[in-house]
Length: 287
Ligand SMILES: [Zn+2]
Image (cartoon, rainbow, N blue to C red; front, top):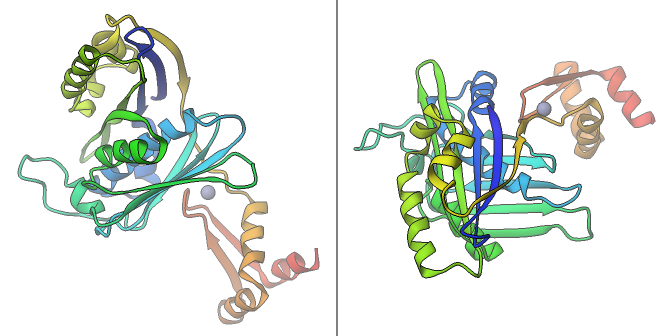
């Protein structure tokens, strides 16, 4: 299931978001032929993207790019309001030996020599741009650090993906945000709970997001605000692709046509191929 649960706990002194991206990652593995390690990187980043999308205000869109110098290359997630997300990795086949604790080496794949960037476009003059340095490349810590440095949000973030040779078993995460009124006691409890949620993918394999909320947060003066679907969708279209082709410029496009007889372009997010004959390209510049 792809779902997002938003709730308040501790008498509104903290916000909890629980996100299940299992189905999205399953679909992405099939489309992008992700290695297990790539699927783990992608699932964690897509879950963070789900959190951004569910918190967008009005009609808007966002992009998140994580670039840490590791062998997976760029990690890109974009989306829109209404909980729509998509993404891709530069190197979907990335592989590394397992870590000593038997886990996939997400931090090694992403690297930590770089930044996380988030752009939110609310349709105003200037989009919001935030960034922070990577901490570990494991994405959860990096995202929490980003939220603090760029958006002033004190949070704890757990993200996890469990895969086997047949595909994804679970992917998702929990983000807990402390509000200004939070007490010392509540902070200690919150830390404890997030510690217990650290293997979130194993928990998500057995429980729905509602069950996770009830079990870990239900007794803490809590209130569920919403449970919504998360949509894993591309927004590419002939029109968008034609704008990209026009953006490349006539010379470059006709250069390629001269060599191959046609112009082919693949959407990086869903790998859909768009092919244009010379006549069709001619028409683009007649319009
Ligand atoms: Zn597409």
